[in-house]
Image 1 (cartoon, rainbow, N blue to C red):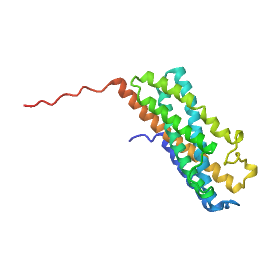
Image 2 (tube, one colour; image 1 turned 135 degrees about the vertical axis):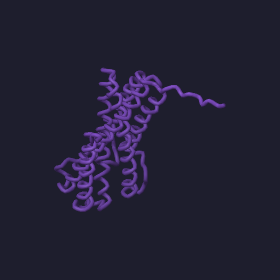
Image 3 (spheres, one colour; image 1 turned 135 degrees about the horizontal axis):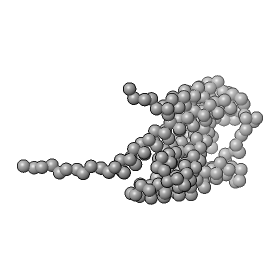
Image 4 (tube, rainbow, N blue to C red; image 1 turned 180 degrees about the vertical axis):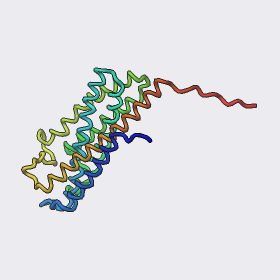
Length: 228
């Protein structure tokens, strides 16, 4: 009987928490005073943004350790973290467009938070693009790590830009300024999406390790069919 991997339990717990948090956010939490029910998208939009930045921060750490140690497991983890971060990055941009259309009347605005979030996605997409052009495994790992470290520069900008420049987005709220019934689904979904991200990263890292092992072993030579 095949062993049930630990990350599956983490993913199941994350999905269960996501169901609870979303239910509370959609049904129990009160509507926002000015935006009404439109604000409820916040319960997935904000956690998606947090999770994307957590993934990229983890990728930044993995890139440093990968350069330091040269171990392939850190390179595999780096790939999983970047790809998972990109998924949540794309989700937050799509969710933000829906929210912006309902509140600002436009699907997109070159607001500083929106622009830096898009740049963040493009930068890490570039890391994977660079990776696809390098055939040597060790060189690929090194270049990917360096590119990830450089790309991470934009992540703090995404978080702090609303404090440093004028933005359509408000400055980050605190639990003291938000209704407790709104705080609970926000935190629950944030934890849920991080757990889901851990599941995705672990699965993707395993696949990358297998691919690396396959590269090191080498493909068997294909025999040409014999024709009579």
